[in-house]
Structure formats: structure tokens, C-alpha cells
Amino acid sequence: MKSNLLTLELAKTANIDLITSGKGTQAVHDVVVAMRANRRSGTASVKTKATVNLSGKKPWRQKGTGRARAGYASSPVWVGGGVVHGPHPRSYAKNVTKRVKKLAFRKALSARILEGHVFLVEKFNLEQPKTKEIIALIKEIHGGAKCTLVIGTQFLENTFLGARNIQNTLLMSAEEVNTEQLLAFDKVIITQEALTALSNRLA
Image 1 (tube, rainbow, N blue to C red):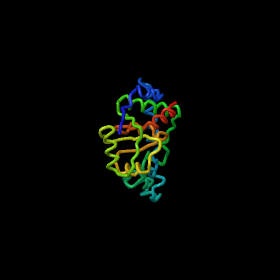
Image 2: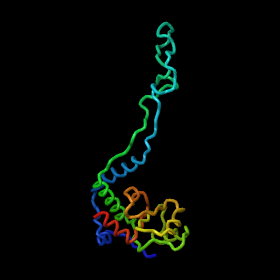
Image 3: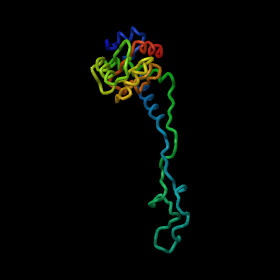
Image 4: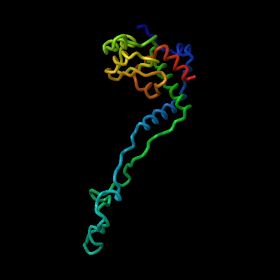
């Protein structure tokens, strides 16, 4: 399959305005942190001295035993007692504006293109759902990599079936691919139609 390295000139031809300066670095950080935080379940929980299942009876009388005074068995200083300042169910969600998300996506795509890790192909489809064929296709495009992200518009079912057993290979549509995915893979393959869709998305 014929493929081209997506260069700065080809990106400009496709009306994709790349970022060649340091602009957008903070936006990428904010978006990736927000995406990872939003995936956290926030279900970690501990019991405090008020909720631990122990008797509320005073362990021994206040005076006369020679021991330190103690009011309850669920005290945090005792084994089996409650936990102080432990985690409780909460939401880790972070909000990022659409403008920052768009800037981060453009910065991530620009960085991968400038690094020379993005390849442009006419189409990416298989006639038969065979894993070895899609491995050979990927190797033909960029020579082989541990992690490959393929961005298209519409993939044939056979293509999905052939790629599902390949570890660290992901097929994503141009409308759904995000900043974190662009940065997570060693190589990125974009179809011609997907490049147009990305151009419209960044317009």
C-alpha cells in the first residue's frame, strides 16, 4: 500500500493549521489530566471512628487503673479503630472548556506530525478478516511499531475483526479520536478522508 509521511507541507495543503511553537503545551496537560481524572471511579472508602462497628462502651473506668484514660474502643489510635483523614467516595471530575480541548488536540496532532510519526494513506481496509494481513499492512506502511493508532472515517467490519486481536493497535474514527490517544501511540496512520474530517474538526 502506498503511504506518505505526513509533513508540514501536506498538512497545510489539507488546511490543517499546525502549531510549531510552544503554544498549547499547558492545554495538552490540562486535557490529559482531566480525561484520566474523569475515568477514576472515586469509590475508595474507609470507616471513621463514628462508623466502625465497635461498642461505644468505655473500655475501663476513668480513674484508678493506672492506665491512660480511654473513652471508646473505636479510637483511631487503637488497632481495629477508625481511620483518620482516609478516602471517602468522591468525584474526581475536572471540567475543560471546548476551546482548550480544541487547542490541545491541535497541539498534539502538530507535535506528532512534526516528529515524523504520522503516515497518510488513501484507505485502510481489508477484504478478509485476517490478523496477519493487517499486521503486514501496518508493517508495509511504517515498517512496524509496538503501538499503532489508525484514524479513519468508516472501517469495514473485516478490518475491525482483523485488528481486534492485535495488542496495542487501535482503530478510531476522526470524529472520536482524542488528544490522549494521539500521544499514546508510537505511530499514527491517517486515511485521506480522515485527514479531511480532522481539518473540518479543527476549523
